[in-house]
Image (cartoon, rainbow, N blue to C red; front, side, top):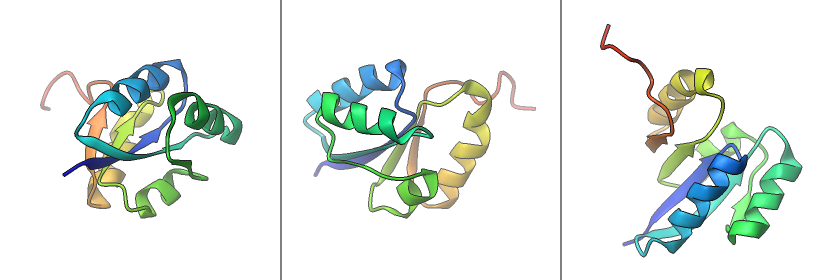
Amino acid sequence: MAVSIGILGAGQFAGTFAKLFRLHPGVGKMLVSDIEPGRAEELRQSAGLDGAVADFEALLASDVEAVAIFTQRWTHGPLVVRALRAGKHVYSAVPMAVTEA
């Protein structure tokens, strides 16, 4: 069964991962969202994604099972928590902390 992924952040780093995710046989539907809608649409087209959504809330409200976060590093913590609370699996491109404390 394929996992569906929502990508948050459509910069160059996300584009590399989107192409890798697309090649994985265990990945199905893929959506993208970015604070700049044009950038999300660009990644949707270049990586062959299934759609672009308006914002993070729309991504969380969608039927994707997992969210991959490719935003600025200082935004990951709060975004990851929101995605987890929405019942999504999460891939965070940066560490959330350097110590448990």
